[in-house]
Amino acid sequence: MRAVRIFFVAVVVFLVLASLITFKVDETKQALVLEFGKPLKVIEQSGLHFKLPPPFRTIEIFERRLLIYDSPPNIVVTQDKKNLVVDAFARWRIVNPLLFRQTVRTEPGAQARLDDIIYSDLLRELGQHNLDDIVSANREMIMEAVTKEANVKAKDYGIEVLDVRIKRTDLPQENEDAIFRRMQAERHRIANLYRSEGEEAALKIRAQADKEVKVLLAESYRKSQVIRGMAEAEATKIYAKAFNQDPDFYEFSRTLEMYRKALNERTTIVLPPNSVLFKYLK
Amino acid sequence: MKIPYKTVAFGTDTMRVPDIGAILRRSGFWLIALVILLWLATGIHVIGPDEVGIIRTFGKYTRIEKSGLNYRLPWPIERVDRPRITEIKRFEIGFRMNRQTGKYIDKPEESLMLTGSLNIVDMDLIVQYKIKDPVRYLFRVRDVPTTVRLATEAVIRQVVGQHTIDEALTTGKGLIQTESMKMLQEILDSYECGVTVTQVQLQDVLPPDEVAEAFREVASAKEDKSRLINEAQGYANENVPKARGKAAQMILEAEADSAQRVKRSQGEAENFMAVMRAYKRAPEVTRKRMLLETMEQVLPGLQKYIVQTDKGSDLVNVIGSSLLKTEEQPKAKTEGGSK
Image (cartoon, rainbow over all chains, first blue to last red; front, side, top):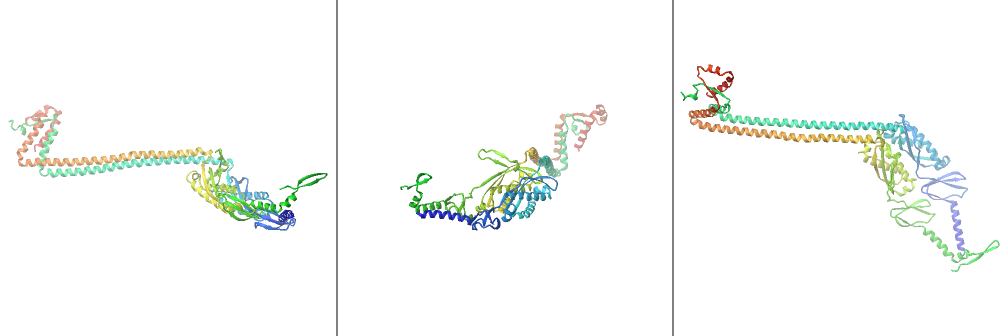
């Protein structure tokens, strides 16, 4: 059966030929077509492509996805002359494989170039801002500026820098100690504030309570006096009304009652013989 | 099937080997068919319930497969990737927890960060995310997990830098979580990572060890504050109601006294009226009777001196000046009463 032999030979020949005149561009990659080693064109379209066999055409494959550049921590000096350890990272991609191939050739080469670009841009940009700005207020803006500048330079290498971000900002040890001392002082201040606020509030509450007590008692004293006065007035009216009917008899009977109450065994009474009491003794 | 052999010459020796040519010639067509079939069969594959299948044809993304039994053309034409789209991926910043041993390893270089107004806080967090768009996840960014981690570190420091240490330690935690989650998602979307951040969870947020003592002091000062306030409140709670009671007591007493005063006056007035009415019927005799009855009651207990009117002054002198005062006062009253 010659058919079998022919079949396998045909398969092998087909595969060899195919590998010579076609190439695959993956979804995640882009291809640079070289003509005798000279860059000819870039193919970004993924899928199967045809080409002339080597050595007329050779293919180099480059990454198309977004890549990470992670810089080592660097010390930068801020505008207010403080040292700051800055650890940044960037996202970049190869946008021009042709330029990329001609200048930095490989990804490690690109990383080394990005080291230079991003470090110098960071150094310069952060040097124009105060420490406070970098940590709190303007980080986003600063990063945008660094990204923009880095991007201009990176363009020459066929690289686009999507963004540069500060991952960590730490202070050198001696500055950190100073911060810790400041934090401690600040905490002491806050603690004292809490305590004196507590005392303030407590005094206020106590004084308020004392005031309420005083006002309550005074008010009720006033009310009770009014009540008593009204009762006194009422009583006076009643007495007056009754006694007015015969003031003379009132005086008489009241005087007698007073004798009963006022005169006792310690009283000495001097009576003249013509007293009404002795009227019948004569 | 009988295996055909043939004799092969190796230099001077000869050797009997299976005659492959003959085998192929005999089984020829079927063998070709079998090889092709086997090759095609390598394209059968299963996509798990938590996965999707992303198919690339000659490197170009062509289609997406759901879970179940699927077919793709065999290598080298098509290839399949199976990202797990339901899986929640999780990573830690500031510490590492060994899942097996439960051992906690601190990473101060990740967890120490600067807050607003330049304080330092020690913050641990957990981030969870999952694949939102498997195509982007596979094709847009190389090494998505590292990308997410780096972006998280950048974002959390930026957000924490915009808050004070007190916010980070207490009330601002929720805000920091939501802000970082939002910002992280925006950044990852700008990278076209194809992931959704499902959670940014702050774990321990503590002051650094170097200043922990000072922070504890603040906490105890806070306690002192509320203790002082509570004590004062207690004082107020004790005294104000007491005073209210006392006030009510004063008023009630006044009311009682005045009721008493009015009733008594009424009683006395009525008494007087009654006596008066009786007196009016026989004034002279009643007047005398009343006087005499009173004297009768009063006089037995008194020390009495009876004096001659014309020599009275001498006797008064004899008795002595010490008695004079007690004498004069009742005398004055006697005079008043006899009117």
